[in-house]
Structures are given as C-alpha cells and as structure tokens.
Image (tube, rainbow, N blue to C red; front, top):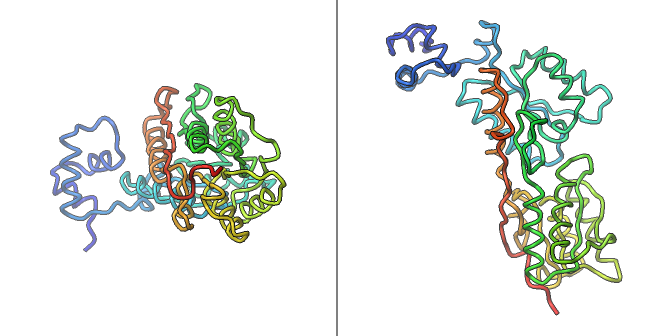
Length: 341
C-alpha cells in the first residue's frame, strides 16, 4: 500500500498538521520535530505528492521555469539545479519554453502562471532582464526570482541571483594579455542578453588597464551559436591584419571559431589562441579543449529556487546585501598559449 501523510504522522507521533508544516518548511516548527518527521519519512520511504497538495490546498507547490535560450546545455543545467531544489523542498517544476520576442509574451506568462496555479517563477535571460515581465508578475502578485548578469547587488533589484560576467571576462582577457597577446578579437553573443554587454565591457576594461584599446574591427556582432563562431572566425581570418587571439562570448561560439580556424589549417594555439565562456560541454568536446570560465549553472539555478521558496513561504524579500553573486572561475586549457613572434 502507498505510504500516506497519516502513516508519517503515526510513525513520528505527531499530528498530520505538524507533518504538513514540516513539509512546507514553515519557520515556526522546532528542529527536534523537523528531525523526527524527516526520520519517519525516510523510514517509510514517503514521497510527497505536490500535485495532490496543490489540489487539496489553496497554496501552490509548483514553480515554473520560463526560458528562451538556444544553448541546450545551459537549459539542461538550469533544469537540473531547479529540479534538485524542488525535490528537496517538495515542489514540482513546470518547464515552459517560449519565444521572448513574441508580441503576446506578457499575456502568455500571466496565463501560464494562472492556469497552472504556480507559486512563482524562476526567470533567466532574456526574461529576467525584461521590465515588462517583472511588472506584470508584480501586478498579479506572483513571486519570481531573476538570474541576471551583474556584479553589484542593488536595492532596486530584489530577489535576484547575480552572475558577475564582467569580472570573469576581465580575468579571461588578462590571461591572454599575460600570454603576450595584444591583438585580441571579441565575438559577441546576442545583444539582447546583458551577459553579452557585461563580457564585452570586462574585455575592454582589461585592455584599458594595460593601456590598450580594443580594435573596433576585431569586435564582431553575433549570436550564442556555433554557426556565429564559424562566421566570426572566417571574417577575422580574412582580414589583412589578423588577431593572435579570439575571446568568444560563450563556449558554443568559441567551438565554432575553432572549427572555422582548423578548416583553414590554423594551428591552435600555436597560431591562434581561442577562449570561451561558461565551461559547457562544448569546451571539453573540442580539440584542443577550450580555455574558459566555469559558470556553475546548476548551483546558480538551485540557489535561485531556494530564494523563491523562501519568499513564497515567508513573504520576505532578499535584501541587496543578501543577494548571491557568482563569479565564473578561469579554467586554463590547451586552446590558449603564448603569442608567437
């Protein structure tokens, strides 16, 4: 027979209401009681049914993940982190891919939340950077947490998880400069993503600190895709004056640039260094493996979900001082090397 909340209550020698309070992570429950209920749940192998809880209660135990991102690895990592947090907290996760540029996107988000009875949403770029989405969710009283590119917590942005793309890009560029590269190209991602601008700003800041200016001909617009990297590399290698290194805005672009360079029989890194960003599987599937910045997307997503649960339970906002900031870490691999004379 299926184990029920009544069985858990009997095993823990507490009321059904107490078990429910423990499952909902209500702050007023004593730690000794929490431990006793959790022990009973483990002994009975009890699995809370979030769907049933939603039907039986006015409170929702489902959250949504809204995304529009061409990078499948990024999306999978985010889903993994969110699912881990949901399972630990007794929530279900609704995953909703959509088009951020759709003219009816705001109403689509509102309809999604209301029809699915979601407790809240985790927003990643570009949705996390769209003021109209935040305003719409606030107007209907729906909780949300945004994962955004930024280095400094701000009182104007509550309930955010920040990814410090600027500092990470500065470190990557500085790595290339220390290898003797001064002719460095930059392949941009989609301009509507703040991460593209932050990474470009970090790139320029590192150059400026060395008294160098970015060559405008070496900064090419693009998108977060393999094809964009191939196209960018072909443009750069067709120039009379070629760069000695390429900083791609993410690993998928970098992998495309490396592929394009190898088709032209360019040796990596002997003739051209190429670096990426994020430490996605693309960075490890190329040859040589890519120097990159490790961005812990599952951990970032898990932290975002935990902030959302905290807000939905207590109604308290995360202050600027408490906003988590993740700085992707430099990972040096074989795709970057000393500039050749």
